Image 1 (cartoon, rainbow over the protein chains, first blue to last red):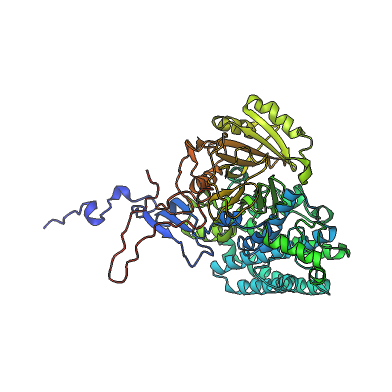
Image 2 (cartoon, rainbow over the protein chains, first blue to last red):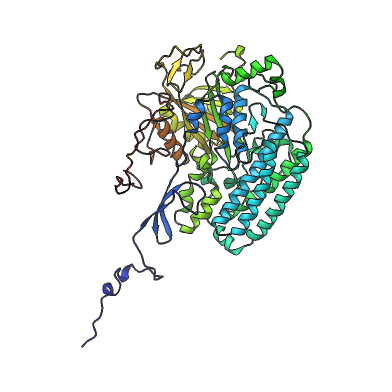
Length: 414
Length: 221
C-alpha cells in the first residue's frame, strides 16, 4: 500500500501558506477586556483590546468609572465649601489640588497672600508631591512584581504623611489651604521634625533606588516601552513628568514661577528617550528636588502672618471670633450667606501638579458661588495617548506604561 | 463690571501677545479682552478651525498644546455678567432676581446672545504664553467644528464637552459619551439640569433571572 501523502491542510488546519516564516501560528484577533477592575492596575479604567497573540492590534481606553459630578457639585457650594472636594481629585497629592483651587479663587478675587503663607504652601505642596511620586513608583513596582521596594516606598510615604499629619491634622484628605491663607501656621519645631523625617525618606528612597534602578527584570519591563515622541505628547496635551521624560523641560515652577519658586534653587530633571524608565528616573529625581525645595523654604521662611488681611474671604481668627461681637457676626455672615462679594468675571490659574499642569478655570457671576468651576486635570490629558503608547506592543507593556502615566481616577473622571 | 465693587479693571488691553494674535488672525477675531492677566479672544464658531490652524502654525504664536476644552452655559445671563447678575439657585434650577429672596422664583428667559460658550485654553510650550478662545454657540443648534485635526488632544476633551453640555462637534472622529452611560438622559452641566434630577435606572434582576445584555461595540457606527 502506497503511503498516503497527507495534504498540508489535514496535517495542520490553518494551512501551510499561513504559517509565518518564524513558524508562528496565526490566530484570529481576540477581544480582551482589560479592567475596569484589574489587579494589575491601580485605578478603575477599562481598556478594550484586540489582540493578536500577545501583540496589541487596537485599544480603546474607557474612563469615567469614578465620575461623580465634581463640577456640578462645585456650582452649588460657596467658594470655601469646595476646598474639601478638591482633596478628592488627586487623592495622592491633595494639597496641590487645594493650592490650585485656592490660588484660582484668589486670582479671581484679587487677593494677595503674605510671604509666609507662600512659603508654607510651597512646603506643604512639595511634601505632597513627594508622597505622590512615592506612591506612583511604589505601586508600579508592586505591579511589576517587586514587593520589597513597594514596602520601602510606602514606608517612606508614611513618614511624609506624619509631616502632613502634624501640619493639617489628617494624612490623606488634608483640606489645608484656605482662600487667602492656610488653615494653620506651621506647628512648633516643625523644621527639625521635617528634617528628621525627610532624612528617613531619603534613606528609604536610596534603598529602593538600589533595588530597582539596576535591577535587570525591572529594567527590561521599563526600558523602551511606552515611549512616544515629544511632539506627539505635546499635541495630545501631555504635561508633567511624562513630557519632561521625553526631553521637554516644561515645568511651571520654572517657566511661570508662582508662590516663591523663583527664590528657590532647583533643577528640572529631563529624560532622553521618553520611555517608562525615563519617567521613573525623572520622578525619582523630582523627589530629591522636592525635598531640597522644602528644606530651602524652611531655611528662608520668616515669621509673620499666614493669612491675608481680607475680610471678604478670610475668616477672622478664632480667638477674635469667640471674644468679639463684630468678628462673630463677620464669620457668621461669611459662612451662612452668599454675601456676593466675589467680583464677576473669569480666571484661569494653573500650577505644576504631581502629574502635570493642574489648572482651575472659574467663572463668577458676582455671587458667593462659582457659576462654573472647571478643573483641568493632568491625568485626563495624560491618559489620552495611552492607546497610542501601547498599540503594536506587547500586552505586558500595558502595566508599566499605565503605572508611569499615574492615572488617578478621582482626578481623571472628576 | 465697574470699579466700585472692587473688580480689577481691565488694564492695558493690548499686550505684545495680543498684537501678534490680532496681526495673524485679522478679521477672525470678533473681540478681545484682557482680564486678570489672561488674554482672551472671541471667534465665530465657523471660524474656529481656521483660527486654530493659524494659532498652531504661526511661528510667532506657536500654540502647540491645547490644554482644555470646556463650555459655559449662559442660560438667562445674556450679557456675560456685565450688568447686575441674576442669582442662580441650582438646587431649584430656576433664577432668583437680583436681590436674593427665597420666595420669588422665576424661570430664566433666553437672552439675545447665544446660550453656550465653548472655551479653549491654549499654551505654547516653546514661547510660554497662554490664550483663551471663546466661541458662542446657540441653543437651537449647539454644534461647531472639531479641532481634533489640529490638536489630537481635543478628542477626549470635546467628547467630555459633548457628554456634559450636549454640544456637538462636527467632523469629530469618535463623538460618543465619555463619562456617562449611553442611556443617560440629558447633559448634566447644563444649567437647566437640576442637581437632584433623577435618571431612569436599570431594572434589578434577582438570582435566577437574567440581565438584559446589550452588545458593546468597540467603534459604534
